Image 1 (spheres, helix red, strand yellow):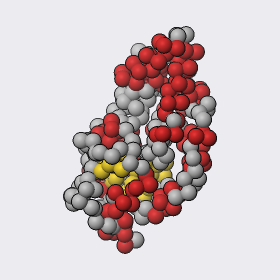
Image 2 (cartoon, helix red, strand yellow):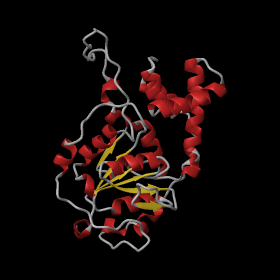
Image 3 (cartoon, one colour):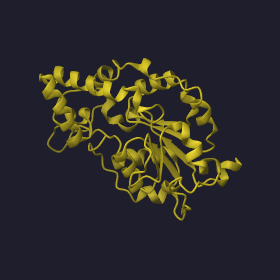
Image 4 (cartoon, one colour):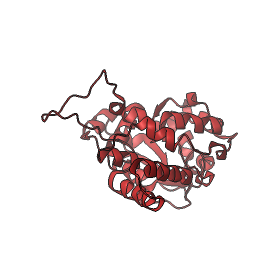
Length: 278
């Protein structure tokens, strides 16, 4: 494709929640309420304590699920997600008649990169009117955390002490999560564009050399090369995707250096499972 050849990007990584649809849909707030209810039931705490615990777990472990697992609670991801995401008001996600066409028009490899579980991802995409097949690949909770789904017939190897280790939960913005997405993308980090609504995720991506676009904001964060108020303004804000020229206020149109290949870039990163930051 001529457009792709003229573009500084070989791949586009796209977040899902509050990126492909606006945060004003209220899914994020509903998720927090569901997490609080789950913590009340699982930990036997009051509503006030559950809310505070959710914040503590997020700050210390990156997510409530990661924190519960790290603290020794016998919580399976499917149980957690079926409660937290299974009760979401998906009807608040409005169909976007222009989104599918916009995504199809992106000439580069497209990878959906979400911390959410696959069931939630598919429900959200269905509400948006976007076929999963539009993306060349998907990186979601299950693909980042396969060790959490090992069956009883495939036991985890025991540690030297004889105890079965508890796998860490890997989620954005951990290094391992972003490296996992880059391996799926198969592209040089410096030629990969990463769109996300979280400033923490954007900062993590930038630290690994990705080009970054903060979605849902009018002003760029320190680590964001671009800022766009909504996914609908993607073509106007980052025309380079289609081989266009960045406007003077587009936010970061410098030329990219492609001196090293993707493999050497990634092999320099030590892959150690981490449960911090989601």
